[in-house]
Length: 72
Image (cartoon, rainbow, N blue to C red; front, top):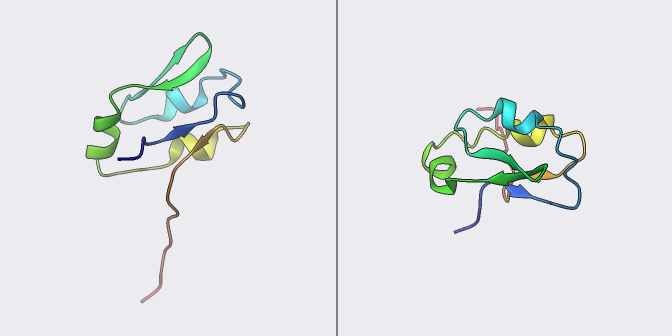
């Protein structure tokens, strides 16, 4: 299973914005780099909200999928 979300440690500047918006509380700062803890909780919450990705100013956060909204 793929880790959710994915963190590019080279891009992370430790700002903590992703940690502050994470509704599942699976993100923490360790040595000023965001780290995913309790990965199963992010996957099992079934929200996969991508808030961390959307607030990351450096593009360090990403998800291994794309959300597509279709009109019916």
